[in-house]
Image (cartoon, rainbow, N blue to C red; front, side):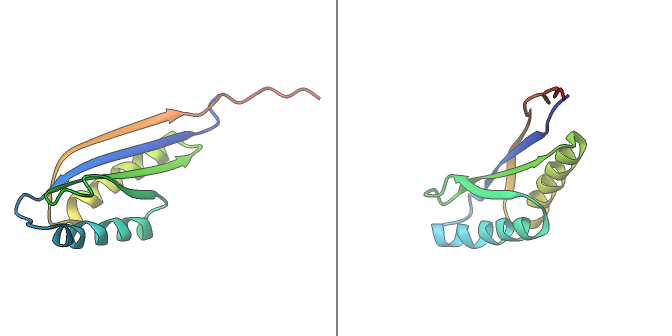
Length: 106
């Protein structure tokens, strides 16, 4: 039996109409902060930080319930797609099983 599950979602967003980093951060950062406040997740801006027209957002969560991890990451992906002024061009979800529960003897 699994001890738990770690779920990771990565989402690449693009905004080719943006001309500078400050403008891009103004679009991405508020979505990341609202996502952290709304859901029990760890959220980070992972890649594209120096690019003005794209970025990768990473989301992670941990639970003993596979279905809960899966549903929470789905809600996060939907939130990212719905809340930002950018295009989601790709997303990837990985759920990893944590080590098996050990049998204990008295």
